[in-house]
Image (cartoon, rainbow, N blue to C red; front, side, top):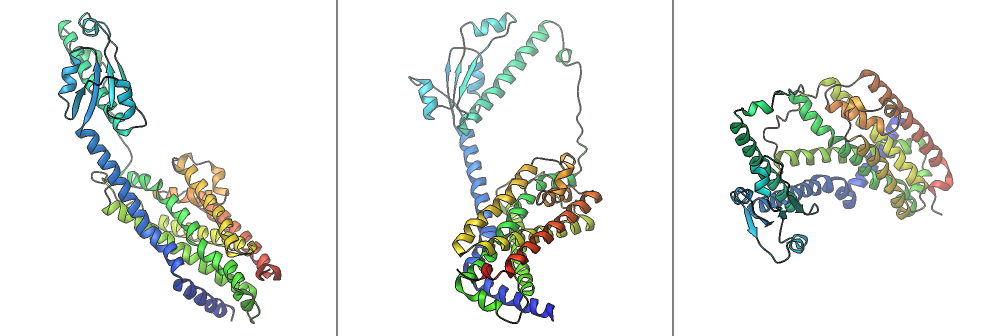
Length: 393
């Protein structure tokens, strides 16, 4: 009987939400359309800036040296002579200013070390590119000078490099792919799970309370726990659908976007049945955690607008652990993180994408998550059964 009631209420809530265009836009349009579009614009913007920076590199040179000829040979480099080079650099008409002191070449000929100054604007990406071009040119020019000095001394270039190091990367293609995704997907998953259910959770209690429909539903011969369970499942489904839409959008970005994935050895070989199971369970417990928390806030809220204000805190709760763990390798994640809500889910997601989940971490992370879910649901149930919490004041 109870299961049938829950299923009936669940169907009713899902049907109402799917009829709501605002809910559909928030759940599917943003992840599926806006996110890939933003990534596409960012990729195009960076690509255009780099092309422009390479095609035209205006610089000014104060002083004389044989280095000037080497700079003129670089494609795109243009030597300008404005009246005020520093002001031109600030205005962006120059990308860099090179100051070569007197007797620069003389010091080099006598075997000394000559110094020059390169002024650039670190807030201008094109100026930073010009600095890199100058730095590489100076390095190449210096290597030629060193080679000539060694030749005059009757030595080979190997005389100043007695040790040659070979670095071998032990990471497999699976770990490389997983490591790249481990910095992006946990963030997208957790934020999507938190944000995907916000609109539905706010509407299912605060919204219905404001419209007066929740009070009517509570007077029906249906147990309050059955109603709450149906609403919890509804919010979880919307959260998971939002997370799935985010994963699809990320796939579109990686597959069709302007990001250069060639030569990256991209593969999903790090996914195994066991890690996939852990990922699915982690997503479910995180969805239940956020759904329960959002229903608590929606129950406390006296109006739909007040509920929206409370819900903004849920996104913050999701983002903090995601950003804190983003740069960490799973081996560097502190053990106590697996006992903390949301932190444990993000940590387990990172282990999944690195291709190996520690069984102890899995048990602790999923176990503690279930405890937090139980506590949140118990709190929600207690608030939900209070007459004042579901009746509009």
